[in-house]
Each structure stands twice: as structure tokens, then as C-alpha cells.
Length: 270
Length: 337
Image 1 (cartoon, each protein chain N blue to C red):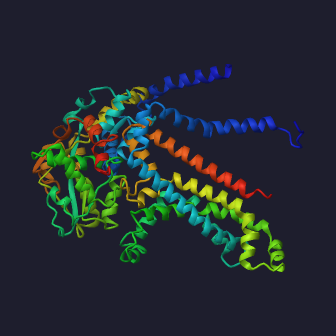
Image 2: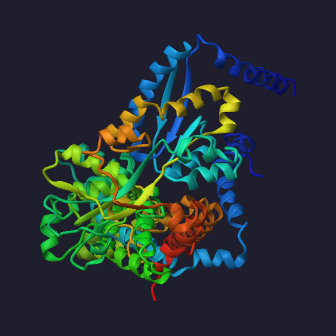
Image 3: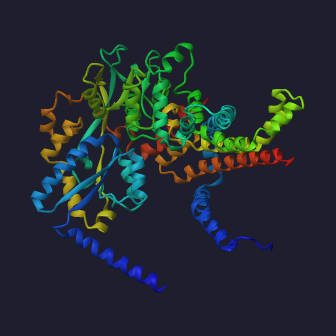
């Protein structure tokens, strides 16, 4: 093995493994373990009922929509924060972190009262036929809120490191602004963008606290998968709850794995 | 190894000393009462009065600490190790879950008067002032011009009472199971929001002004009226509804461990005394003491016609499985055809 400048591989690796084991691996294996007490047929009946499938579609669909919106808006915000100096920049910077710190139930309550028929936004949206509360749209809106910081926070340092030399070179070689963005800037931020999107997506899939206040929780329509888990728990069906959790776990793992592969591919020229 | 041995001895000694200390009259003891959501105000009052009563009776100082939350979530917390001396929950089935896991001895429901329910309640309708949609009976809740608010029976104990009241209205009047299923299906088609708890539904109805009728605990409806002053809302008593008996029990395993059985038993018995029954009536629950109930007949008018969980489903255990379990009636009414 190559000699390292800083010793302590065994200690640090040992601590890392022990910590990950206790904090992540053992709790996750207990999910798998508990769901194994079900027979195969029972497992499928619970995790693949039409109602559960509808809930997965909403959970993953709304999380994907939220991540996509944040990819675009987050890119814009990160650009503004990294490239320009303006009054109130520090305040805006702090604002981005609010969704990290705020208890999500507070976010849910605030959104549901704003978008309710008699709320500040709702009273203008309802006459237009837009139901921004107790609907799938409402789920997308809160998920966009709670996953906002991820894309911004992963892109911001990349923009800051990027510098302006490459852009200036591209410009002096005759590239248009759009060409500069598309061919020079975008490829170098793409890996970070994908990481941010993956984080935002993962956060949105697991969200429960804020969604239950705004979604309306109607089975087959606006019920999210984590709520099905709560329903199983209320029936003291711990195995059933674990079974649905297991499906979410596998799906999240697969999707994040896919995004990581994509991110690797985007670095292929490095 | 030696160190672990010392720790074990210290822990053992500690656990032997603790109950002994708890019995010492000088040290105040704490009783933990794990209850469901809407009883916050009630048990705060009861706990304070009980502390005075118990001290004057035995010389022992006691504080009651109350924990509130969804009935099922609270029962799960106790299963998970929350040291509750007494549980006062919304449904017998949540206490049965504790019985099934050996925290409470069988036969708990016969231990105290009235099926261990110091008070009862019922399910009523809360409507906007003047009852603009003219909602009088359960049948009105399936009308297409009426929008109904109720919490989700999968996550809320109160919502299960609501569901069973609607179901029972059909089966108690000669309807079959098929009729009752169709009825609740139609009723839930009128529900635009299923909040996860009873308080959440009240907020949706009262603050966000969604829906024409809220199906609610009587005490929750009375509290909502009290808070808004009676200018915006009114209570409608359906001609027939369910008698809800939220039971109480001592958690045998915990009181034996902590040495608090005497105080816990005294606390539950206290719930049946005149003082506590008055508080119960004050907060909109129906005291089991008939004379005190009669005294409050302005806010708690006599029932017209009542049926019980026994009439509807036999027992909570059966109701839980048949209606709210996996693939039960509630799941079926939301399955696409």
C-alpha cells in the first residue's frame, strides 16, 4: 500500500464503518428484516395494491417535478448569488437555508393557509380554476419549497470556482452568449447540478410533515406513500409498514444510483 | 469486564432503590398520563385538581404529566417504551394493543365502572351558522350539494368513530352490509380533504372554511363553538348516532416497575368523583354521573337514539380488522372498480 502523508487509515476507517453501521446500516436492515416476516403473497398484496401504486406514482412524480423545477430555478439563483454583488445579498443567501431549518409542519401549515380558497394566493388562483391546495399541484409546490436549498448550495461553490477566464476566452473566439453557456459553462457545472438534483429528489421522496397538511390525503388521488406507512402503523401492522418502506428504499436507491451514473458520465472528459 | 460488572451492580442497586424512594412520602412522585389529542384542556385541569386531592388525602405530593397525540401514535409510543402509568385513549383497540403485548393485564375493561370509561362522548355535525345546507341527518351527508370534512380513519381514532357512526346508521335501520358500504362510499365521495387527525379537520373546517359539515367529536364541536363565540357555527345532533366510550387503564407493567400502582389507581378512581365529573362536563364530555350530566343539559342535551360499537361490529377488535385493516371496508371504498 502506498504510504500516506497523514497516518491513521485504520482508525478513521474503523470509526467511519462503525458510525455508518450504527446510524444507517443497522436501522435499514431492520426495515428489511421486519418486512421479511410477511409471506411473499402478503408482501405483494400490500406493496402492489392499486392504492399503493397510485401513492408511489404521486410521491415519485411530484418529487421528480420538484427536483426539475429546482434544477432550473436553483441554477438561476446560484448564478445570481455567485456572480453578482448587490445590496441584500447576505440576506438572500440566508433565506435559501430557511427550508433546511424550518420544521416542515410549519411550511405545510403556511402553504395550506396561503393557497386555501380564502388565503392570500388562493383567492386569486381559485377563480382561475387552479386548485393549489388539496391537490397534486399542492404536493409539488411544498416539495419544491423543502428541496430548494440543495441545488443552490451544490452549484454555488462551483460557479464561484469557475471564474470568468473560460467565458472570456470563448467570447473572444467568437462564441455567442448562448454558445458560451451551452458549450463552456454548462458542461463544467453539470456534475454538480446532477448531484444537487439527486439530493433534492431524495429529500422530496421522504417528506411527510408538510405534505399531509396540503395534500388532502385522498386515497388514489393525493395520498403520498409515507402516509400509507403511517396508516399501516396505526393498525399495528409493523411488517406492512416496513414492506412499503422497503419499496421506497429500493426505488430511491435505484434512482439515486442512476443519477450518480449520469453524473459520472457527465465527467467523462475530465 | 470488571468495569461492566460494576456498572451492572450499580444499575441493579439503582433499580432496587428507585421504587423504594417512590414510596417515600417526602419525595414527590410523578404520574404519566398518556392520552389522545383533544383531551389536552381536560387533563390539564384534572391533573392539577388531583394533585391537591391526593396530597390532602395521603400527604404524598404528586404531579401528573400529560402527553397528548393521535390515539394510535400514543399507544405505539407506550409500546416503544414510553413509561406511562395510565393510558386514557380514544379507542379500546389501542389499549387492547397494549394488552396483546403484555403491558396491561387482560380484564382491564372490567376493572373500573362503565367499561372503564369515566365519560362518554358522541359524534355530531358542526355546520355553518344558520345551517345553510339544511343538514339534519346522516342521509344529508351524501347529497351532491354538500361537502363533508372528516379525518382519515387510517390515521385518526376519532375518524373511526365517525365512520362507524355512518355505517351504523344504515345497519341499525334495517340496511344490509352492502347498503352500508354503498352509503359510506357515497359519503366519502363528498369529502375533499382527509386530514390525519381530528384537530386538523377542525382547522380545515373552521379556519380555512372548507366544507359544509364537519363530522366531529361532540367535545371538539363544543370547544370550537366556545372559541369562536357561536357567531359562525352551530352544532347539529343527528337523530341517531354512536355512543363513543373512550376507555382508561393502568399500565400494569409500568406501575409495578415504578411502584406507582396506588397513585395510578387513585387517579383513575378520581376521574369518577364529582369534582372530576364537573370538569369533564365543563370541557364538553359526557360525565358518567347522571346527576351531573343532567345539570349540564344545556350544552349536553339528552341523546335521541344511540347505538354502540357492540351493535355495529361486536367489538373493537373485530371493527378494526373488518373496517380499517388492510383490504378492509375503508380500503375497498377507495378501490377503483
